Length: 159
Image (tube, rainbow, N blue to C red; front, side, top):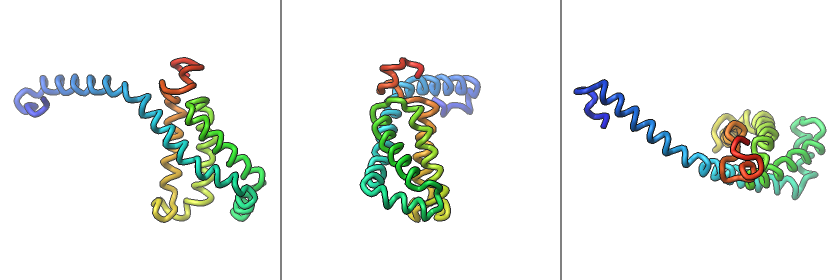
């Protein structure tokens, strides 16, 4: 449609705008599905690290202490508990906006204490992956869990 813009520029701009607006309207139907898939992928990404922390919480506390994290045992339990709660709540789409906030904090701490000095690239254990998780979690804070969630079922459309 937009190829004849040179011959009728004003009409073609209007037509292109109409096509784009219709595309935008139709793509709204995929929003909740994409939020569901994103929640499940992020929950899956947190699952193994959370389970590893709980398997050997003492070693995690020692590691936290070696990095200078204050109250390493308390923080190890808090990080592991938050990650497990996040896995469950994101999977269910329950309290999604709320649980995403402490999970963002965990990602910030991970970036600053572990990944930042390695640069950006995930290949060098840089902060790329935690940054992506943080961005997805921010999307959950700002958009909620979507239609396919317990948040929607319990709290209604504007959760």
